[in-house]
Length: 119
Image (cartoon, rainbow, N blue to C red; front, top):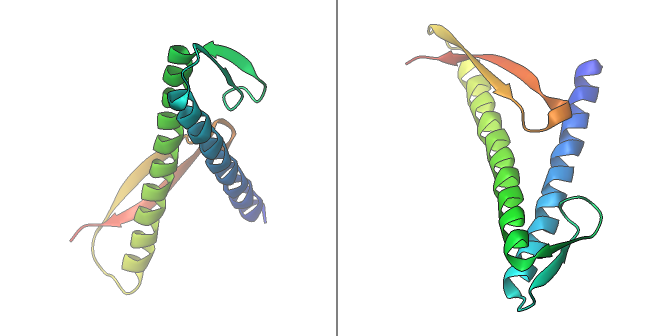
């Protein structure tokens, strides 16, 4: 039961991350489209902050890259785990322990250990 709760909590946080990415994308697009020298940004801190247009672009690009990296890391790890599960069925080959530390979200850091089959 605790595994299920942990899994659902991580899923909720992953969805929150994707929602934040959508907000950051929209504000980054708006920051590049504006001709004003100052831009109000809310996606970074969840409250409005006034930035110079250049600093807003830099901050939003950094946050965008961070969120895309987290999302990509999760997808790659999920694909690797899925591949390992499919290879374990009926396989008699030697295993090598592989450890991934997933720190995608601060409160959902965990250690995933699984067997990777060597062909």
